[in-house]
Length: 140
Image (cartoon, rainbow, N blue to C red; front, side):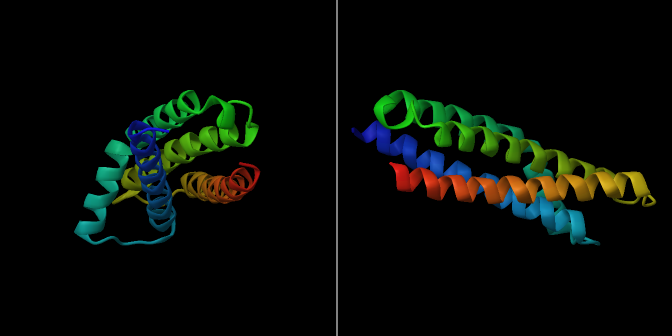
């Protein structure tokens, strides 16, 4: 394993951490109101860059698989975790977007239910990512 592999691995972990942090802020946004200006700025940044984080995580994960095919190619846990990370990034981005659009508007039962469902989906995705990460580490 060369220096490039470790660089990609570190980048993969950093982007994964960004996605999990974004999920935290998305859940926070779903249940907390009102927001300070600084928090709204963070949410807007995450909304703009969330899909980029998800795409980068996918590309970095595939790069790791290509670099270490014997370790990763035949492991379905790795592939599943990779897809779940991308989904968590996209759901987080959508949840933050919905909450930002709801600022200053009257609460609608339908929109609040949608936000709650997306929040629960996101929490399940994050839990699955953590569990699969532990399982994948044990099988490696």
